[in-house]
Structure formats: structure tokens, C-alpha cells
Length: 580
Image 1: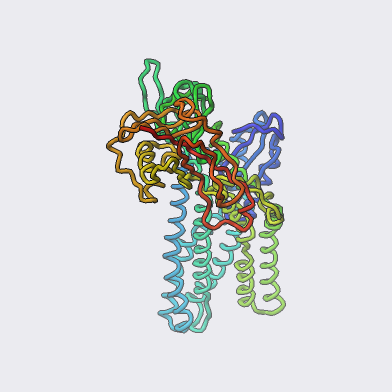
Image 2: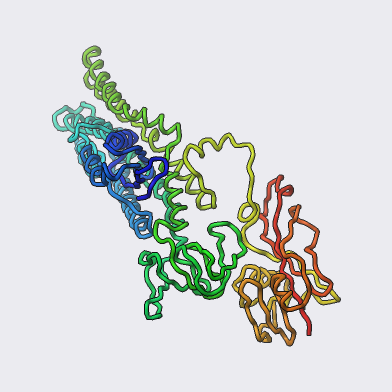
């Protein structure tokens, strides 16, 4: 539960709705919630099976909402955006998909056999009785979800798409059973129609369940970015490994090199560089010292950090991103609101049309059998499952796909309006570039050999986890200058936030930022960040004649658009100096 600024004194609830099968269900649940005292807004999404409710806790509780929804034949429960709850939901989704698949695998073979028997051997008694025997499990076992849902709706005097399916297939089946049992040899039956209609609808439900499962995986993928455990310091100073859900505000945590920071907090001790690309897209780690804030799910590149937890659970930056994506999936595009309005009255209208069709054939045409067939056709063909499911599923896929690529979409309306976009402004990292550093230039000076230089620098950086260091090592390997001097490295010191100093084959190597060089009195190098104005610039970073420049950059995507060369790209240069 979170507070809302648009409705002071109200809270936002994310609730799971069970039993919905069509857009008419959405309209009924949404209307029931919206009419309750204290509810300022209610939005129900068929694809996610969730309800987003803005409610005054003083006037209505979750139990009140659940009771009202249960009175109309549906279920309502609270949900959590925590990883464990999402894992449970994923298992439930998988169970639902397997259940639909089992029914499909039973209904289709039996339905096809009934079709063959009905087309080729309609007049043979053995074929008629066999078709009835095979169609019965299709109707009452494979099609049981439709019958059960229709019965639940009937008990509360409502109807939905399953009501249409149940009435249509049951009418065809019961009429055919009467014809087979009491009719003559030439009496026609429609067992093939009832069996194959159920089979087709089951296949549709299975595909819908699969699509919803894939679309909702975006939320689970985001939650997977977070840490699962945390190292908490006890009062006696010892460490304990606890689930991240057990961390409370004020707890002191230790984060070792390469580990994910479990929760949002503040550094109290230590210094390191933190990879925040999960939040910002920037591949270069950000230096963190005592007093600096850190975000959960970011990665401690090197160095040990001690942090004090400041935000846990639903209050972390990652949880807020998940909540934004979930809220976007729950919103409705204008076209979906129109579809829901139509679906709200669709079922009763179809029932009236089907009844009128049967009456017209019987009373005016004198053909009740033809009237039954026509009425069944109206009931079955009129089921607009796609009317209520296509749009929300498309929104789920769009917002989920965007989230997996680092694009957060605010709402379904924004997504629908994006078709009118004519100008796009990109940031650099992860958009125009791949978000990882690669070696671009090596400029040896004073007659130094490039291969020897690169080998020495790569040897110094070989044990580093810093992206710039890894880029140099990987670049040396690609250029055939893989270091053979790893065993000759000694005195390697990682200067947090500045670089590395080491002795390689008897020579002192400094690889890092300008400040490291200043401190080492090697040269007064200019600033280490320069602006490049072309996709593949030919200009080199400024350097001093006293040393050597190694340039690394966030590498571009292999197929940039035609406008890419006009966009700005930031490059970072790592200066190194070497002397006996």
C-alpha cells in the first residue's frame, strides 16, 4: 500500500482478481469496486488479472473490497511486488498453463475423431454412439472451466463470455445426445460441432495464458536484478547472512567486491566504485566514499563498503521502478476503455439476440432444429474474447519489453500517443552505445613500442574488476598483445576512485585518472573527459609528451542510424605513464 498525491488521505492498492475470463468480467468488477464508499478510483486489467484501487483506508479496507467482489462471484486478494511473491505468482501461472494444455491435448484428438465419425459414418449406429461417448469427456471434463464459470455467474444472476460458451456447447451437446438416444437412424446430431468448439476455445485460452505469462515476466525480470541476501553486522560485530526481506532501516550491512548492494543506504565506511548502470545506464562506475548514497541492486566493483540501510522493501529505487512498470501495465488506453464499455453490455445483448433467433426460426419458420443451430452459432461466434484481451495484452508486452530494454513507459495512454512522435532525443550510454567500455586508441610516445606498452598496462590491470581496466585487458587480448608479464607484477595497489599503481617487470606503472598522475608527479595531465563530435572521431585526447595515452570508450551499436553521426558521444581517457 502506497500513498497518493492526487487523492490526499487515500492509498493505492494492488490487488489480484481471480475468476475473470472476459472484458465483461472486468466491467463488472471495476463497477463494483468504484461504487464502494471510500473508493476514489478503480481500474481492473484482464491481462494482468489485477485491480489498481485508490481508496480511503478509513472508509474501506481490503476485506471490504474483497467481500464486495466475492458477492458477484470473483475473488480479490492482496499481492506483493517482492521477489518471493512474484515467484509464487509465476508458479501459479505455470500451473494454469499446464492445466489448459492438458485439456487441449485431450479435447483435440477426441474432437477430430468425432468429426470424422460424424462426416463419414453419420447413419451408422456404432459411429453415433462412439461419437457421443467421445464427445462427453470433451464437453464435461475438458470444457469444465467454462461450465463452472457459467454456473458461478448464474448463482449471482450475472453472465459473462463463459455463459455464452456454456449455453452454446451444452445446447448442441444435449440436443445431439437426444437425437442419438431417442432419434432414428437418420436423425442429425451436432456432436462434432460441440466438441470442436470446446477444443478451439481451449486452445485460445491456453494461448492467452501463455501470452499473459510471457508479458508478466517483465516484472519478475526486474525483481531478479535485486540481491537475494545481505551481510548484516550484529551488535557484537560479527556478520550474518540474512534474506534481503529481513533487512530493516538502520541495519548496518557489509558489501564485498563483486556483490550487489542489497538495499538503498548510505556509505558509513570504506571506499569503492559502484556500477550503477542498472539505474543510470552509465557503464563507468561511480566513486563512493563515506557519506555517499548507494542504491539497491547496483554492484560494488571493488573495495569493501559498509552501509547503513535507509530504504528497504517497497521503498527502494528498484521497487519504485517495478511499481511504475506495474502501474503502467494496469492503466487503460482510450481504445481499451471503449472496448470495456461495449463488453459491459455485450453478453446480455448477445443472449437476447440468440433467443430472438431461435424464436424466429421456430415461430416464423417452423424449424426449431434450424433455430437451435442458428442460436448456437450466435452464442459461440459472438464471443469477443479478443475485444477485452488484445489491448491489455499488447500494453503488457509493450511496457514489459520497454522495461527490459531500460525504457520506462508511464501509462498506456502515453504508449498509444507515441505513434505521433516525430522527434526522439537519445541519451548516450546503452542507447547509442552498448553500455560497456572498449579500447579505442593506444598512442605510444618517445619511441615506446605499442605492444610492449599494452602488455605492461594490461598486466597491471589484469586483476582489476573496473570496467576501464577490463576494457584495457580485453583490448590487449584482441590486439594480440595479451600480457605475458602477469607473473612479473608486484606491488599492485588499487587506489580507490583513482586507478592502479603496480611494478611490472621492474618498471613502475600508473594507470588511472588525472589526480593519480598528479599525485605521482608524473605529469600535469589535463581533464580526463573530452567531448567527441563524430561517430568515429579521429581526434585523440590531449596528452603530455612525457607519457602515453590509452583511450577507452563506450562502444557504439554496430548499426547506428543515419542521424547518429550528428549526436554527441562522451569518451573517457585513461592516462598511463611508464618509466624504469
